[in-house]
Image 1 (spheres, rainbow, N blue to C red):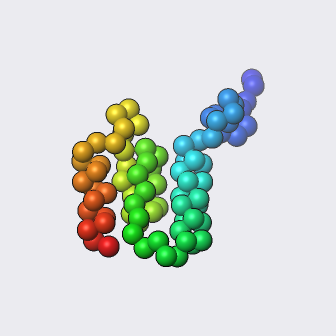
Image 2: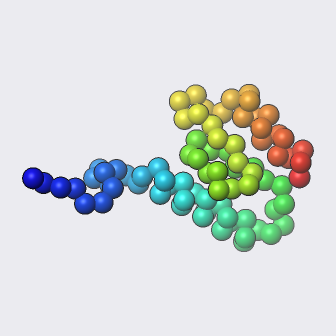
Length: 79
């Protein structure tokens, strides 16, 4: 029998969604650390970046919705 080593999504040269999510969160946190003057922000993405405090998850099939816009506006109202 032949086995597969590593994540199945690596077989075709693509990153797994969880890897993309971790990388995206790191990139955003890194950018924010380099720009301390930025105090109001909101990340909007179709990847689950729930590790971020100001995040709105969109549906990859439909894109940003009116509800997503209202969620993002709520972050700015709180800040």
